[in-house]
Image (cartoon, rainbow, N blue to C red; front, side, top):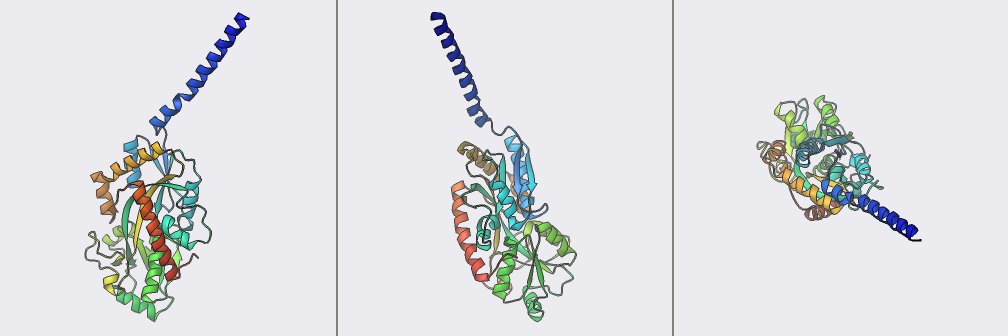
Length: 330
């Protein structure tokens, strides 16, 4: 009996030790995050503003976190395809999402059925940048100012086409808002990302575009595109000679794009905190700041709570714009 009881105690002790050994690595693993590459899903094609900003931030985060940040471009449906993929990813900190004003403030008003919930499916980390949109035209087009564009569009209704990075993007809505406020008939041509739209603009397949400044400014500087106006309330320091749309004949017009980084909802709080601290440190890095500013962007580093409140306000603002402009997905 004594021998059996001793054996039983030894067996139980062994099991307890094994259980303890199984449990111990979990906190250590959480503290060691990240232990493998991180994927950052970008819901638009390579070469567009979302992609440009993601690569600037991703490269710096790789250095800060000690793991590669792999950019995964998943374009389509105004950012909804990439958004859906990210929303369904495992909430372990190894999937991040570069969201935009489109994916997190506009699409809900434009799409009758969203494949993800912008609020419930994501954990906001921080905005990355505010970016002006730039009204650009192919140099072969017969207008050089907003007033000339309006006059031409009114004389040729339905003949001026404008490209965008996809239905529901801020680039699309900037054009729809312009159509509504300037009372002109222009045709929207959606693309799967800004880069393919810019390519067709360079080839004069489309006439104009209200593109995010980072993906258009290089072509303006090279003389391949004509900058007509910026969509913000004030002129951009990067293109001080380019007037605003509002001062060029459409008073009250204003449209700004923004971009921000998200984790998947349900990601453990310590990992969210670690990611947020790393992101803010990266955004305050002088080299990163300089790269974003050179693209025409304004760096924004904030708390997750501030970012969440901003998204709530933006959703209300753009929902109203969608309704008043009559914009709809194609």
